[in-house]
Amino acid sequence: MGCLPLPLLFVFGVVVGNAFGGDAGALWGAGIGLSLGLVFTAAFVTLLRRRK
Image (cartoon, rainbow, N blue to C red):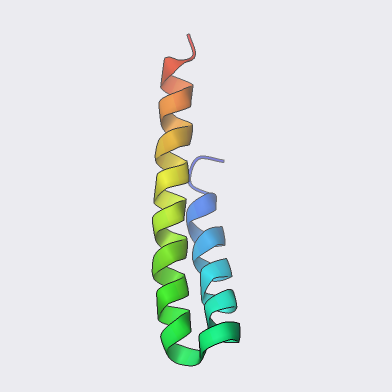
């Protein structure tokens, strides 16, 4: 589960961006999806480390 959001949100961002904005939207969607995936992964790892 730790790294799964990265590729899922990346691909989801590309698909949604392409649907709404064509090629430029796909690039923006990929960037936003990758950023959200990194944030969610970091939050997940932080929560796991605090849990003792």
